[in-house]
Image 1 (cartoon, helix red, strand yellow):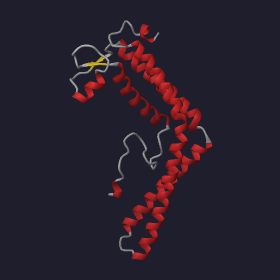
Image 2 (image 1 turned 30 degrees about the vertical axis):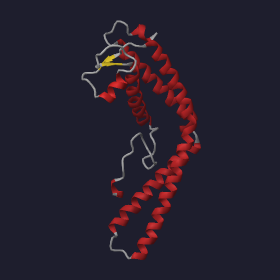
Image 3 (image 1 turned 90 degrees about the horizontal axis):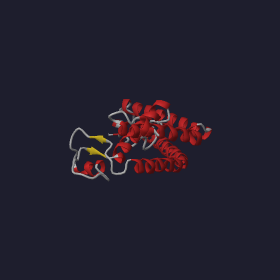
Image 4 (image 1 turned 180 degrees about the vertical axis):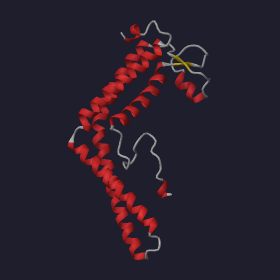
Length: 196
């Protein structure tokens, strides 16, 4: 199979895991496109979130610029901002629930591929880490491996790193990343600097 293709290379196991991870990411994004991204309801939710986030951003910047406005004007502007924020949160929640349906199918594909790779590389180091990682990372990177060389990397750790990085970058490349105003956009959403 794929390991036979790379068998003559020095890093054959690592390249096999990375290649399978890339193929899995492409399959998962194809599934997501079929179930989510091509539908009209997803497109309308995404455009609603984009419009609301732009409107909220402009309202907050004009609020900062007009600091000398009277108190009555500020309270009405605050109410409008609260309404837009509420609408944005509701749309983001709807988008998350909409994306949830493909999550099960994608998770099933990922678990099947992980099981296949686990049976192929059980107890076998697939890569070398160029340093000795900290204890917490050692438990993940050396999972299922015999021996005391903590620079050995298990398939599970390499597959996890590849899956996270490849799929996230593939989503950005294909334009499937969550709208910037969506709550919880990304694995570690950045706080809004204007709100602090």
